[in-house]
Length: 301
Ligand code: ATP
Ligand code: MN
Ligand code: MN
Image (cartoon, rainbow, N blue to C red; front, side, top):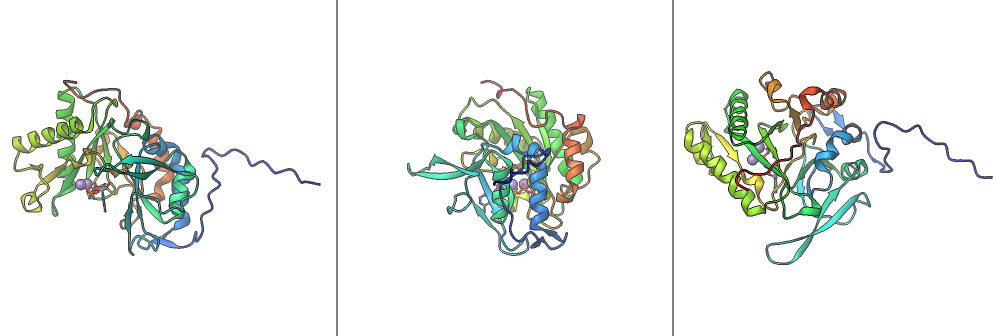
């Protein structure tokens, strides 16, 4: 006599077979948010996060004892993430291959959370077209002391300059200090072309307004300026994925925003993992319709 399995009603978000242990462990002491809260956030946000994150090689920021304790950046699997987290062999500079991680469902996000992951970072290319980047990122890093107002102005200027050369771009609050300007691209050109274009674009901005912008890593030259970090655009580099939580005070998330509404936002950590409903409603709103997607190629290609 076998009792038939009780079929659960199908929820809006895909059910996952991943078990989250220690749900009560506090991961964000400032916000008193637990591992269970973080897992619930990712389970709920998965439908709007996965279109950006799925099938890209990812790196994880893991903080098994919480965000205030030791965290580490992980690119490779030590073998224990389970079936939801997939592997793709990627050629290294030395000619050898290393397995990188990617995921394509909510279970993948949750399996990573189960392993202490807070942040998801991704490549600018997808696993099926690894050598063809399809997203360019200008990561605006303000020098300490610069106000968010300056970062917003910089993002708006970059948006305008990109529009002038025919490129659609989108804004994302990093959840940390800055704003990322994201340029979706068709996967056609190679990594050298990708990095070179972003470097020349950033250098042109800093050449035109050397008091506001700098395009070199050197900390000394950044004083009072915004570093246009174009180095996210090279093979092997990553940037934080839209809707990823951040391992910082108060559990902020990387949040897509519309260009119009950016003017009224006063911090890159405006939304947190406690704002799931608002983030989901926003994602479906007119401001964010089509956010992060555009069929376009770099000018001149
Ligand atoms: P903020 O707005 O505070 O700058 P951010 O996500 O842009 O937030 P950056 O310090 O500018 O933070 O991030 C640079 C990027 O470098 C990160 O998004 C991440 O993908 C990558 N990164 C961070 N830590 C490491 C690491 N230990 N190894 C390799 N790459 C890293
Ligand atoms: Mn940054
Ligand atoms: Mn940066």
